[in-house]
Amino acid sequence: MYLGPGVWPLRLNSVLSSEVNLLVLSVIWFLLEQVEERTNEMEGTSCIYKNPNQPIEARVKDLLSRMTLREKIGQMTQIDRSVARPSALRDLSIGSILSAGGGGPFEKSLSSDWADMIDGFQKSALQSRLGIPLLYGTDAVHGNNNVYGATVFPHNVGLGAARDAELVRRIGVATALEVRACGAQFTFAPCVAVCRDPRWGRCYESYSEDTEIVRKMTPIVTGLQGQPPQGHPRDYPFVAGKGVCTVMASYSSWNGRNLHSDHFLITQVLKEKLGFKGFVISDSQALDRLSYPYGSNYRSCVLSAINAGIDMVMVPFRYELFIADLTYLVESGEIPIARIDDAVERILRVKFVAGLFEYPLTDRSFARYSWLQDDQTHPCTQCTMHIISNLISSGVLHRELAREAVRKSLVLLKNGKDPNKPFLPLNRNAERILVAGTHADNLGYQCGGWTATWMGASGRITIGTTILEAIKAAVGENTELVYEQRPSAGTFASQDFSFAIVVVGEGPYAETMGDDSELIIPFHGTELISSVADRVPTLVILISGRPLVLEPCLLEKIDALVAAWLPGSEGEGISDVIFGDHEFQGRLSCNMV
Image (cartoon, rainbow, N blue to C red; front, side, top):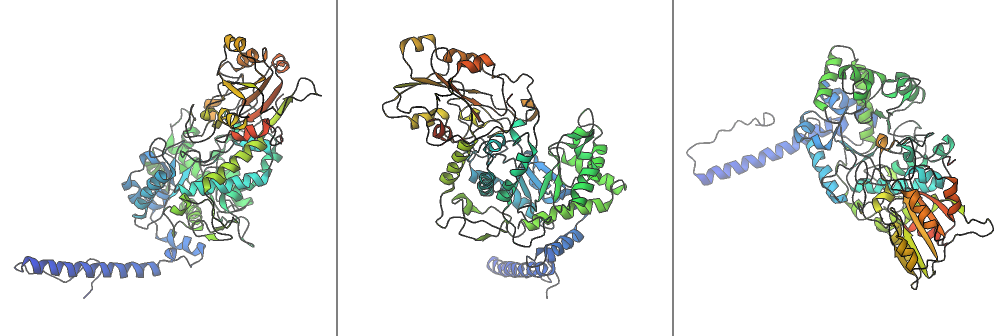
């Protein structure tokens, strides 16, 4: 007779032979497995939240009613992968993990390596009492830029110069597919900053200093999340369209109030007036910054942020302290349980909408293809993507898209010393061409920050085409191409050049580490330009995340100037334009004067 899970009225006779013992144990083990399977089936049908046919709100309500305070607070906690122990994921019901600025399983790890890592975390989370899956977050801010070999698109400052809303939507689609291929479901993008001061280190994350241009770039959200079906409630998350799922608060302040503790903006405006139904997540360690010195009075910081309306906290390291302090604040009544329930309800809603409960692990088919069949609905995202019917490898298709984005982002700032005699396009069949500059053959420099790591790096940090390689592929077979990063006087004395291409600019940086009060061209770029332009007709290609200072006397020396921003992995987009295969289309998205 079955008395319940694991309780059986059986007693083995100790004098049975070993063969009989094994036989009896095998039978018992088989029966136990059958009972456990049947029990799981019965529990699944009785748990509304496990039933995909039930309405999402009913599933959210059912699951929320089963959760302890410990589990609710766990769902509100996002931790870094470096501190994500299996026991914490299982026992604390942690809601989300992130890979901060790189954060892969190892250096130059491929998408499949990321998928293995993330699935490992997910399996631990699924072993929790209620089996609530994780959301895994990553900073895919210009493609899936943390993953080695991913397509790296131009940074936002360049896309703003392109002013092509459909282009950024397609970039969103490509990014989403590559992010899902590595197992993550959550990207901290796009950044909707409006940069009015180029000294700010996050200038390149802004599409423009013009709010109207920034507004026109919103189709990238539809690309990232998919297109909602007709009649879908506008403000309800769908992992699609205007029903955006998550909003990240900024480190910034507004009218003297830190945004992470601004109840008016987060709750009264965003959630109540605008009807936002997704969840609000903090920026990394943002609660620590609510007090000075950073990290002090932490409990007070947690109190102000959660009561302001922050739903999930990117802790990301001191999660035990965060959980303990938030638990205390709820149990003491300083944070109402209704505020906790509201936060968790929003988090669960997004997880159900995203299909995480039905499809928590990586869909490995994304590793082979970038597109699904025409009008096919993918179960992981519940979104419809219109795509070509003959499945095309993601690598080629996405890199061609990135190359197109580079072409469209280039801004021609000067073309010839005489307005009637344009210097561009260049003659690809010229006898001898000099290529110089620190950025001509440096993939890391042309990708910028948030590539492979938080700060980015110099050198061949991912797979792509440098500007020098692109020029080599573009010139005629009889053209001699000479590359010297810093040409010597002897180089000019011994050779006659038809013209020179000098590629200079900024080194990679991110956020406050990129703040710069001077905005001069680094690596003695100004001196290099002057030295070459004094001897040879010169095109300057400027690689930067913002306007840089070029003195009038220097501008007079050079024959042509192109702002290429931070173009990413596809340098051929530059050669396509400077040799005349495509026209310049980019327009300044920020003031260069």
